[in-house]
Amino acid sequence: MAKACGVVVAGALIWGGATLRELQDGRRAGDDALRLLSTPLTRAAELTKLPSARALVVIDTAQQARDTERLEGLHSWARALDAAQKAKPEDARTLVARAQKLLGDEPAAVRAELAVLEGAVALQQGDVEIAGRAARMALVLDAKNDRAHVLSADVAIEQKDGRGALAQLDALGLLADKQPGLLNRRGLALELQGELDAARAAYERAGRVDAAFAQGHINLGRLYRDEGKHVQAEAAFGRAVSAAPNDSEAWLGRALSRIAQGDLAGGALDLEQSRALAPAQSAPLIALADLDIARGDRAQAIDRYRAALLLEPLHAVAWLKLGNALMRSGDYSSAKAAFESAVKHDEKLAAAHNGLGAARMALGDNDGALAALNSAVKLDHRDPNPARNLELLRTRMQ
Image 1 (cartoon, helix red, strand yellow):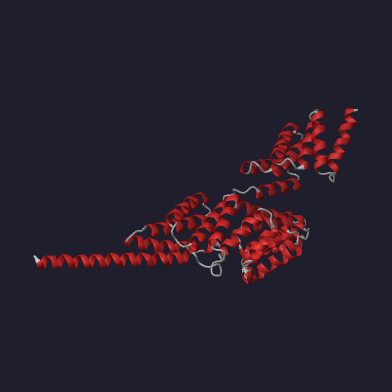
Image 2 (cartoon, rainbow, N blue to C red):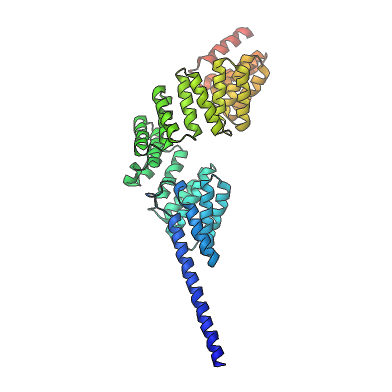
């Protein structure tokens, strides 16, 4: 009997030792996964660069031996990050909330990282208010969290607060001038401040730091195009195309720059490539329709504007362009409806009020035309077209 008891005790000790080792191994695995999920900004410049897949492998392996609430929380965190990186914000948001619940007893620095991820996911969904709240919470939990400052800068940029964004970037010290993504943010913030030369310099530096960083080239090209410097814009967008040949925005930018220089054929080729890369985006279709107008193919343009509006029904400028094309085709009733949609989605779009006035005038609704044209004049007194249309209307009403 004593011998049997000895065997039982020995077995219990072995079992207890194995359990302890499993717990220790699980703790170590969790720590390893946490280090991956919290990789410093200096080693992973953006959330998209964080090694979510490696963290999941570490956690999955540990869970096969022994699962714990902490490992489950880290697993939800890694899955949330993976979903965010794959542009699945709804899935990511649910998983972040679960991770926050399971890891509520972790140190403040860990909870700050989760708050940053929550904010980044909210930005993906266009929820700037929640993103800002998450950014503030992250900084309360860990005032030295670099990613919290980056998120705060992103929120400020979305809110058109250039000064606030610059303050957050300045908090990162020298790091803000060494990473292309941060330099790109600085350029956007400087644009908001109206400091266009400094913004251009920031975009150019982003390209020098990393020639493969397409967004800096794209923003530089956009800035040049806005200034009417289409040759420089084409060159910048060309660098973006070389850096990221699958980026629809890069092809679209180069197309518009080429068209502005009279290269309709080259622009058309780039637009078709942009459209192929982003079939769910309305911008390439609208640009193709504009090109149809330039070539005199109004029927094709109308079809494309309508297709673009199926993708983005709230696009006021697309409604305006559709209305203009319909007016030139003599379909005044459909043009009126298009202009009304443009005004509905952007009440301050003066050209839409002018178009609506012209359409109503063509349909014999003089009172309605007068109201719309007066609105156009009030919204943009520099545009001569509403005044001309008003003069025509007054002549008709005499």
